[in-house]
Length: 163
Image (cartoon, rainbow, N blue to C red; front, side, top):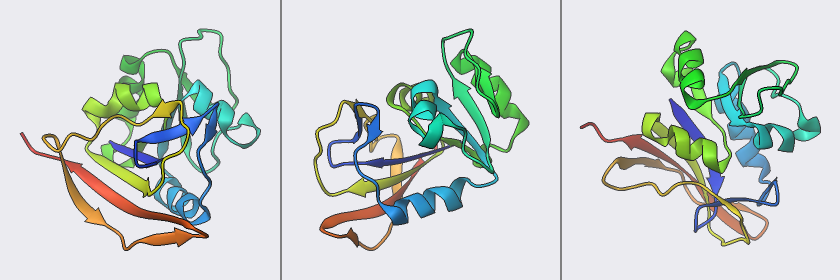
């Protein structure tokens, strides 16, 4: 299972229900990485997407405690265990956890790979990605430094260490 996230230097990922920053190349990579795959997200993340609609061309799984929640085009699960059962239908490498904070925290123990866009800036944030422990994760790839106007960022890949 993969996680895919853009985070600032302090692991901030969002503020007041919105992404901290929109970087077109990061969005292109997200689309390329997840198209035709399975994306798992929380209800708030779904509702923050354009039009509050599912991501086209992907299997969308939404985790929510609200038993009455409905969303056209999404598989609704009400527990981490229910999501884990649902994703057994797919190859692990085709599953991407896409947020938000509590969903990243819940699935961190199950992830094998983290695709991180590290933004070299600290934003005001109220949602965060969990710490990536060097005891559990190895940095296996880092892109060249990228820029978007005056913003500097890079793409990193972490792999879970074998026990």
